[in-house]
Length: 107
Length: 119
Image (cartoon, rainbow over all chains, first blue to last red):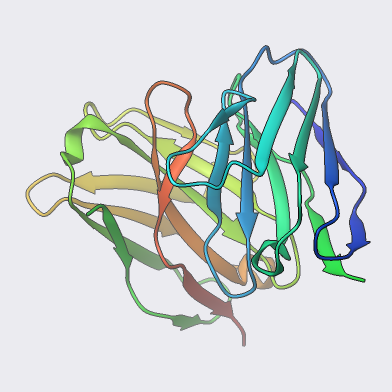
């Protein structure tokens, strides 16, 4: 199975800050990487697919990059509604797997 | 608009079975596959499996593969996930999600179904 490791596990930031979350795959997955945002009590929401493609309707302050084993999700200027937990997910091969999540908290 | 509406919360005893439904609308049901993802209390997301609505092919996570069955009913545009021989570790919120065929990502999700396993 492909293991997905996110860092950091949590980060405290202020509104307006830039945030970068990393996700590392235990083996190469090309660009088969997605990012999701989840708020408490809600279903996850797709933000980025194919490592760097922005899902329709997602604000342009979200961006993704990377290929192979190393990926990043960046939020250019954090807004109040961005405080949430973020997950990466690989779809290169079954079983599909998620990272453990990164909680973005208010400083 | 695309919607996935799941059945309501369940409380089950250890050893019992649960069957969660996911009724879809707003798109051609047979053109997309469905995955199921669960989330234990305070924990991350765990992929459980995938089903092709087109031909019924399935892939299951090893952790549940001996106890889970995923099916679809094209007449009602509904997907189902049945989990048998429940244990306390199966207590979680269960989500269905539509899978985009091009990049195998979950672009629409159900609202989640709470399943509690308790004696």
